[in-house]
Length: 474
Image 1 (cartoon, rainbow, N blue to C red):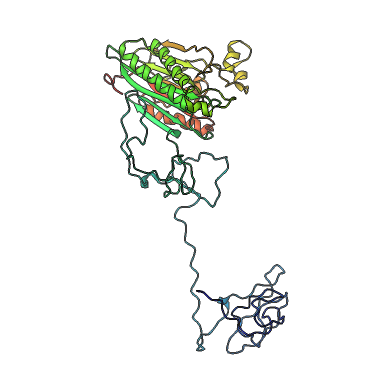
Image 2 (tube, rainbow, N blue to C red):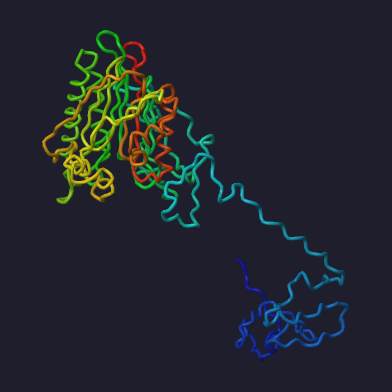
């Protein structure tokens, strides 16, 4: 057990000269700590008291006391001498060795302001986390969990979940503190940091088709989804498929709606085309299948429990493309778009879809110019969508026969908001997009993020004509 130090027998406070009573541990006048106070020396103190500096006295007892400082340079009394300034002796009278030099504080292993290349800050303009909880993303090369081999794409062309091959008993480790276990709600039990969701950033390449989806910089989750794949027509000719869906944020469970729609439409197309269904009819049927999948979400108990009277049923938009050796088919409901960009850039690019939106209706009715309509705050209010509360569904389909090679860009408004015209989109598409679709899709998503990333961003690229990949490739 620790004990309080014995008090030295003093009759006056060494600091303010006030009389003391036996047993006092603190001076009643100035609060001076009387614990372990040595007997008061006969000479005058060398520290300034109340701004008055006594005259230095000659050395006594063989100690060369340093002279007191007059002031600190700002008109205030100088602070007392520190121990290192006063030479001392041990109990035998020998000089004490000089104090060891103070060690410099250790430098941090990682500068607090540095960031690994490629790290992106999701909310550069938003509120930052408190300084007492610095969280830094781990280096992927030193991840706690061993890498899991990627699972091949499923028959529908949809990417398998990243953790599908992980052992059932493996626990996820927090990406921020690297020690805490991640609870089922997606938060670290140690530091409380929210973990990245699987859908925050998705990439997939299926034969000559590739797609990338990103949460963006402002949204708290990714409400977009896509499905890509390749198949063969009955005569053996190759066919490529891409579906992109954008969840309606004002509806219930928009992320579930877009995922259900993209999967249903992709599976419908990849099943109908090998049976000989015309690509345009197959696209029409795929949109209807997607609509049924979204409508079914409104009947689930989960939606019934979460849905408030002022909320809408799950809803999303859909846009898709089918590319064969000589035919390009597009289909859509909502305001996601398809662009055509020729490889040689010898002919003008084109937008192949018309938005189901308030702005498009104003332009079609001749009430506003396109610039005026899209500058209005109501421009992106959609007039067509997939969902149980949608108006009578009217899938839009169109077919084209381009006369030269090109690239088909299928995207949500999270991209075309930053490249609205066909010319702007063509300028953003890399020149080698037909041969490097995944890289080019990443470039286009980066273009949207560099522009502000105000919305989820999803884009799929399909080269035209569809290159031969072998029957049934995926």
